[in-house]
Length: 256
View (spheres, rainbow, N blue to C red):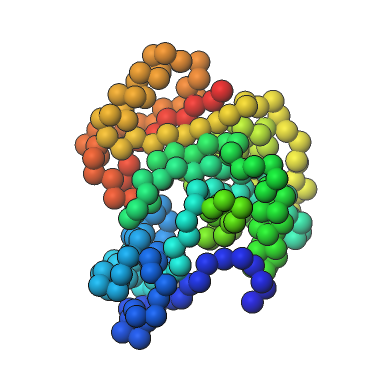
């Protein structure tokens, strides 16, 4: 309604699939309307597998609903912002890495991103336009989008910090912006502090899915102990069993 660039989408509870399934622009992405952590996200190539994907998404959803949206090609990124009194402040872009089709579980994040300087202002302007359309006035925001060549599309926006340690750790480590303090200040009505503390050039998080990832982490730790910022508890019983972001075995954060 506000002219914001985003993919085609529709909502469903599964009851209208007979009329929908033959009209969709396959491939499509099916996901719950109201979950996080990549739960029950699936790339659907044809009408034959749509019903099961929608059923899985609705069962994961708190409100028993799913979104079916056009699949967007390209590399995945997010934009981290803070908004106070309707004024949006850009903090950084994040490069995102995933397992790819069909579940797109996130394997890591990096700040700063590799978005060309020539595209950054255009993307920021479109994201601010989207935040205005959603009437985000006082909040953090985490906007996920994809870039394909010179084109980009917004996928979704959360009125919150990015998870996976993006908001809690990476933003501060890579920019010096105290994102957590900004969120608290917005909540209690204090003016946010946009000054930047001393920070690293790069901050990255790598998620551990299996023993190979774990061994790579140990090798990196032995070679570059000064670059390790944090290693989480590691659940070795989860090796090879990740179905979404909540079932990964652990993570480590690196700074440069």
